[in-house]
Length: 233
Image (cartoon, rainbow, N blue to C red; front, side, top):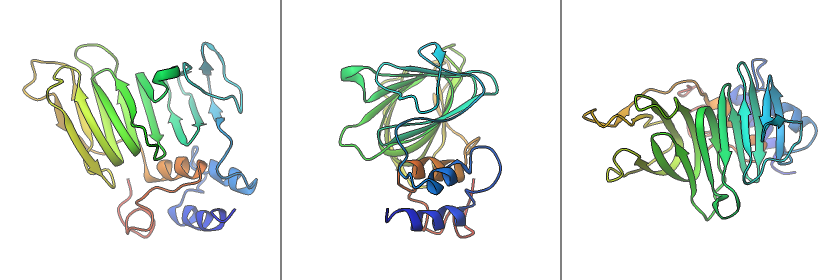
């Protein structure tokens, strides 16, 4: 595959092949000549279930499925041209049939990259409805309690964000490299429900690894940020 050699060089320059965590898993795929990888459950650690049953390597994740990770657990999987890094204590529900472009973060932490589909994808979190296209994003959702909040970083791409507690306050914006991370709240007593945040708990290496699994690399590679001494998160 023509993509394989330049991708290998870019990933090496980005430091993705380090020994820590899942950052080097794509090296296995490259060594096997499988880029993009087959859709399904690519890598698991700890307790991972699909629809209440233990997940298995290579298992396909599809419309209507619920993926849950336990404490000290993690999962990497691919659905079509989208890839997910689901961290511990996280529940994701994927929309069925007509709602297959939708997924819900019930609680927990997930980093996702999405292909440039013609159709907008819709992410549901406890505090907002988020419409995205051609996007990489990281979410931490504290749950449905009124005092809970959602962390959302649009790592790159375009988004339309509608806070649940103030649907009239629609925010539409685009980013290229983590420029506008946010906390979204449900507490209507707060003067502002959407507040600026910093970049937390996700890295450019994580994004590069996920994109590479589906035969892409993130837009910040080669732009002076992330692979040549520029900013890294």
